[in-house]
View 1 (cartoon, rainbow, N blue to C red):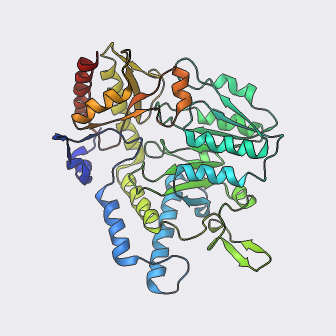
View 2 (tube, helix red, strand yellow):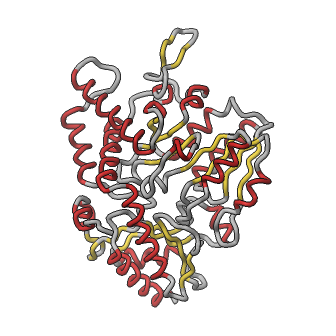
View 3 (cartoon, rainbow, N blue to C red):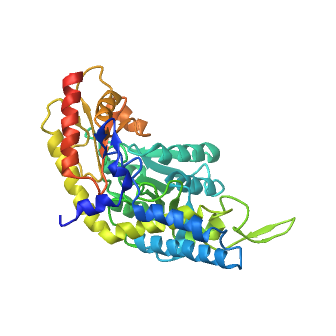
Length: 407
């Protein structure tokens, strides 16, 4: 790829760190990405020059902060190609976005209804639906995994019925890095009149998203996984659906009129944004989108595919390594274990950490996947645009040490 990776890396101050006397190799981007200087500077600038509450003041600082926040909303609208900027709802992250939808459906679903999820989901896309079904009596079903660790999409036709009201699936698995066939799922769900929620936490940083072309009804993602601040995220919802649903939180900003007897609610997006938002985080997320756009999300996707393919190639050199869902399409991450009895993924992670290499180990908040493979966890290497093949080689050298020590 014709990318100036060293220039990109120079924008991330933390990459100059040493860990345990070694240059940092950060391969835990699926958990959170590092932040470029433009995002860090944006946060500082907001607090130094524009700090004021939004939408509530006629004074200059309030108006400036409001303008910056709403500019970020429009940037995110364009980033995912939403039809309207008011379809962009700011949340604390993917988890809150999913919980928002599940909570506002409490008085919509009945015991006659069904929800479909999958066995490849993060806990955040499992537990809220379990809670909703406990509260409403609705039935929760799931698309299982095949032996190889990909969705058994052939089972979807049997799971979908006229009672199906919602299908929830991640676009990319956080635990395995597997890309799921969401286009097929959305089409088939809509044929039954069901809504579809897409968890894009692991896809938004890595691949172009077009919600109009995708035709999903809801989509959620987090800022901190796409070079933005922590504690900020996005819920996209189709305008007509969001208008039909009740509010999530009650309080300031989300109201039109309040009396002691009754309240009426504000229009979108404010109906779902009660209270003072994370203004700095929202503006910082806009700066992160600018950073991504300065490179190009398709360019990022293509470069990271090279990194993932190279990692799978290098890991395949070792007969001691088992790569999960090896032959599936991957995006952003690779998950594996050493084939040694009594060796836990955390053993590998600790050895790599001594060499300055950061990977994620454990069940990755996706225990049903681990139960499927009958393992306690995996080692996951996950990537961002600032990673390099040289770093992957360093990671492989560290893995060789782990194999010698643990084998």
